[in-house]
Amino acid sequence: MKKWIPLLAALAIATPIHAQPVTPPAAEASAMSEGVVRKIDAANARLTLRHGPIANLDMPGMTMVFRVQPPELLDAVKVGDKVRFHAEDINGAFTVTAIQPAP
Image (cartoon, rainbow, N blue to C red; front, side, top):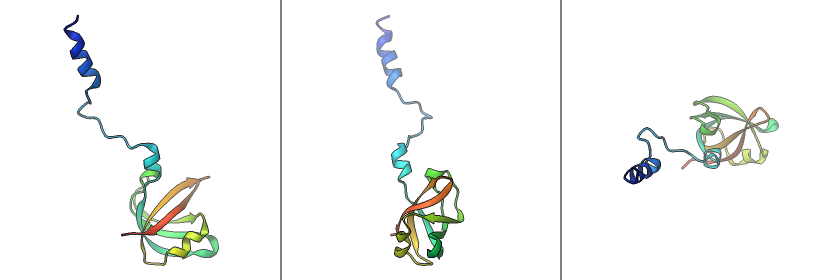
């Protein structure tokens, strides 16, 4: 039995070959996505973005309208800007909660 202990210990700590890296939920939730500003509706605090995949929402790339919270985020962008942004599902509404110019 003693000869099996090192083998069992090695198997217990070995990483399976097929294992995928796990992204911590906090890192995934704060991930920024890339997009291009297509339209700004400041009166209704809405923003139309053509965007790539949004990992934390499990959403493929597309063009869509987002709510913006806080509305002052719209002051930092204009139509045609390439941006990095964070979006969340807040009470069933896809909402941009952070936005910045893309490098």
